[in-house]
Image 1 (cartoon, rainbow, N blue to C red):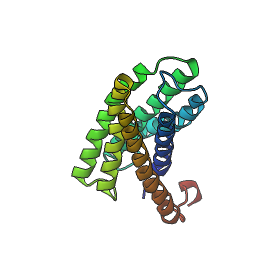
Image 2: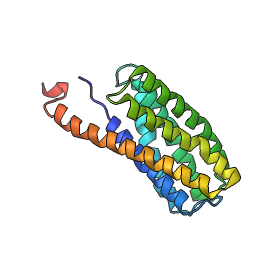
Image 3: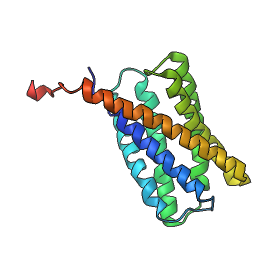
Image 4: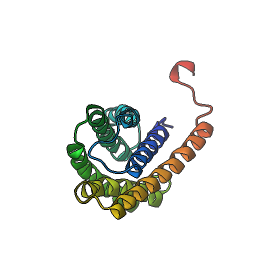
Length: 189
């Protein structure tokens, strides 16, 4: 049996994606209002901490560490960049362009998770990664074109992905509480 913190990572990602959707609902200025900096910092710190731990320690079986750990680091650094940019009043352009490449990676991982049948629900996980990735890939277009229909499409991607990750994360919390209820660390065995 292995112990993991993927539910924390999923709920954190869902919260971050939902915050981003809410920020986009307010409109799309060059830099959002400063209070958004704190909102973006919270998912950044959890995603970076969990992601770095996962990619350096590989607590999950096989390539799950790549899918969840490395993507968590990319998500975390994006939210950290957004937080810093908003707090300092900097243009979000460089962060958004970086997000394009992270989004492409999420799409590739989502497709591969589905093809390999990874996770308990490969179709749902694959769709979650693809929707998250589509958000990252299309936000740069919004930065250039600034069309309302595109903004609402991105919001739809973000909220849909957030709901998938919330469902998956909360169900994982539910099963972890049951599956791990009798677990004890080596020092207590």
